[in-house]
Amino acid sequence: MPLSALRAYAQLVPRGRGTEPERLVLLREHQERLAGQMRELSRCLDVIDYKVDMYEGVSDRGEAHRSCRAPSRPDASPAA
Image 1 (cartoon, rainbow, N blue to C red):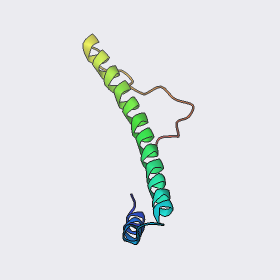
Image 2 (image 1 turned 180 degrees about the horizontal axis):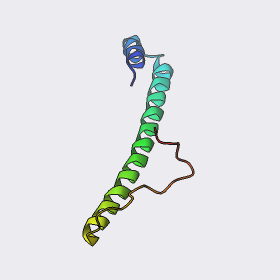
Image 3 (image 1 turned 30 degrees about the vertical axis):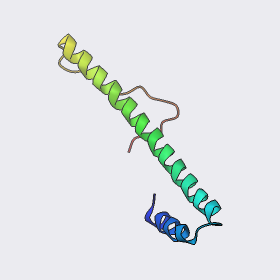
C-alpha cells in the first residue's frame, strides 16, 4: 500500500464507526494494485519458465547455442 494510502487508513481507524466505507475504498484500491502486480509477476515467471525449459533442452542435447526467446504474445507490451 502506498505510504499516502497507509497514512489515510491509519487516520481513519481511530475515528471508528462511519469510516468503514472510506477504509474499504482504500483496501479495494490496494487489492487491485496487488492483483495487477501478481498478474505481471506471473507473466514474468512464464517467460523465465520457458527460458529455463529451453536451456535445459539445449543442455540435454549437448547443443552449443540456441536462441532462447520466449514466444511472442499478442497481449505483451514491448520489452524495455
